[in-house]
Amino acid sequence: MAWQVSGRSLDLCSCKMWCPCWLGPEIEPDNGWCAHTFGFEIRRGNSDGVDLSGTTVALTGEWPANFYLGGGKARLYIGETATEDQRRELEAIFSGKKSGHLESLWGATIDEWLPAKTASVAISWGEKPALSVIGFGQATMRPLSNGAGKATIVSGSMSQAGLQIESMNLASSDGSQWSDPDFRSWEGSSGNIHEFDWSN
Image 1 (cartoon, helix red, strand yellow):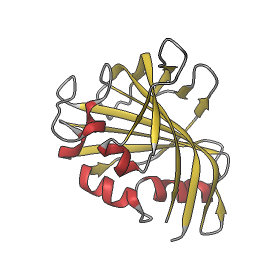
Image 2 (cartoon, rainbow, N blue to C red; image 1 turned 45 degrees about the vertical axis):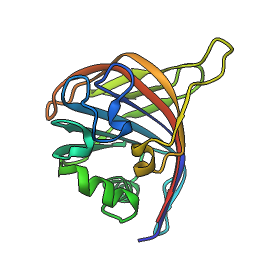
Image 3 (cartoon, rainbow, N blue to C red; image 1 turned 90 degrees about the vertical axis):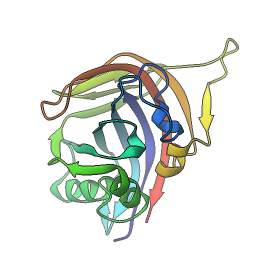
């Protein structure tokens, strides 16, 4: 059951700015419900001898209210370049089926996992980081900063602790959209850019 994945990631959601679910269960999302998508670029990774380096994963979820109130459903999109062994391990890790912190987090907030899909999951960085999952959604991030160019960083929020993400750069994702027929379609402008280093 031993695994490790690390790399860069970003997220977008159906809220305007900033998704209140990061702060805990007390605040209602902009629309009353919450939809969220993460993109993960795995730069280094291994799971029971399977090398996961260079793979990509997107995760989308939908909740009837604040994330922490549970009742969510979710789906994974595994990058099409992954081998069969890599897809198996990535699905197990990111759905929390291979133990670790995601097992308890998703166990408390997600009631239904829809079948994972293989898709083109492209993540790019630079001045405007972007996520594209062909056929499902896309977002382009504009990292926020003050007038002197210092990045707007958030750390210490409740969801960051649950996801084991130490800090993140807030970003605007105006024009981001998601449309999977098994979920409600949405547009939003909330975004974050972060790094992850997870293991079990």
